Image 1 (cartoon, helix red, strand yellow):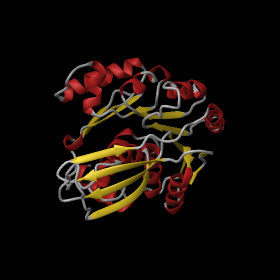
Image 2 (cartoon, rainbow, N blue to C red; image 1 turned 45 degrees about the vertical axis):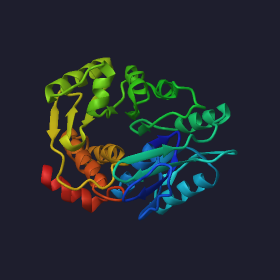
Image 3 (cartoon, helix red, strand yellow; image 1 turned 180 degrees about the vertical axis):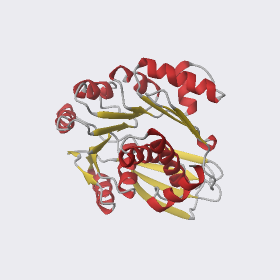
Image 4 (tube, rainbow, N blue to C red; image 1 turned 45 degrees about the horizontal axis):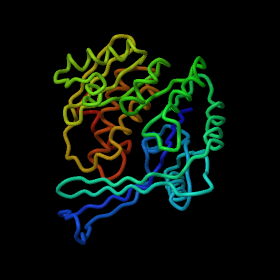
Length: 302
């Protein structure tokens, strides 16, 4: 089974305008409300690809109920910890001549509720996969990724980590199965600007030496690179298409990689290219990637 954890889920209120003017009344010409958060996005896309997963994390209030309702509409199993006070955050995504985001802060998470999540994670079994993705709300300890990975260490659970600089670097000692920095994040980890594929792969190898097993590097319109634990490297250009919505594209790449890995019996090449196609399929759509969209793009890059 694949499990995803989203510590701070959200309802994304996505609006499009011809132009956005601060301090004035702005009228939208398109709006959509999507339940999200990085782990939740991974679970939705896995479901779209025909792979079962269970979404874990924290939900609260009327927004939490809507997130759960949407997940059930996608057929995604969930086992959230429910909070008695507050509400899951609302993020406003304004898409005009430039993109503007206003992200909510989310509810307080008491220590007892955090321990409730830990108990759910204790039920994972050997060969299960756990996806830890996204930011940590201020009411949780900033080392919670490390606490979870230390708790599960040595149990044969594949752990995928998609997080920012410090969160990612601090968990490498626990040998995550897959990490997915983008090219800018990878350079930032080492305080450099990486301009070539050779430089990117050299620094990916440094992350492997620190403990990462496989490194997937997303590069937006320049495609992606992969460095496997067996020393293999793969590169793919970005599939051709029109960027519609970048929200969830990276999460979709993770879901596509896991789909390819599961369906191929552990073939990293297949997993990589399916990841690239899935991330692009989401970027080219108003919604998250579907199987037919992914298959069509995969044919153009394999």
